[in-house]
Length: 464
Image (tube, rainbow, N blue to C red; front, side):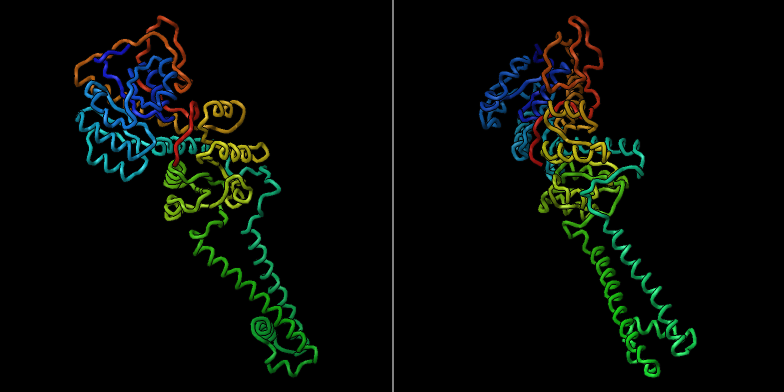
């Protein structure tokens, strides 16, 4: 077992992220200790005892027991709870107890992150969004780089909404064609019946189409049927002008108020559709937008603060249920180059992925799945690409605290103890931690966290 001189990592908070961090550190043979409240002892005590992780029981208000944690003898402290206020409180209390121990604190609010970085030394603030978004964005760039744009053989589902742009273009083209055909015909009648010069007949035909035409003195000298022709031409002109005016006004209003409308269709092709505007989805959309990638976002709640922020940056947002076909139609997801289902619900993400990744549609889909078993099944049995915010966050934290602990060991002029024999690493450790033969020496690279991989172990994520 680890000794006091090994500078263990103290983990506080056993939400899904905290569990994954404990399992990964234990699999990396980094000494880890866990502070357990009574509720956490009931839920996770058996699992930690099976792994052989050293635990310490604290009260429900564990900040009062901070002195009992003996923080100066630790390499780093990881605060992995899902409550920003409690984590910030614990960070400040830990800093008062020990001014040198590095702290990795989980904070999702960016204002608190900036405040901690400016005012509290030796603190690394992280969140699921800040650690997962760059990985998902890079994965999206890799998929887009391998994809052939505008595949000509991609069929659209029968329920897909027809393109409104093509409808408007067809209507406008039809009206202009009607004018081009109607004016020469009427000008020919005027040329033959009134014996007018060609230019005068052409101008008169346009006047009857665009103006009343009935007050033209030349019509009083023509045959009686000329008045009927002028009336019909005037009515046709009014209809054509009304249609043209409506199309122009509709286009102008759509362009002007598109950011304020919740159900405006997205007029993009081969773009990226991000489902979910939470901390992960919004960050991914912004990262792709900065890289000049056309992005559209689908969010079920129009009141989410990220919605207005995305729209202010020129990213179209469709407010609607991602499981409804009409919402997919508005986002033009059937013609997307890539879709990322990043909502906080495995069921919604899987529903979207199964619809769009169907071989008949062929849209590449990256799905955010928190269940380890479901993630593994999706990776094996479908073309969807699973990604786990819990796994990516745990990888980032483990790399960070490994560097923190290494720096502490150098300052104290200590040597890392030899690793223990092979032990059970648990379901959160990841596929990269395969049991080594008993008696074999650990490789030097096992003391550092491997690069994060998309997918892998997952668990239920906190609210975004």
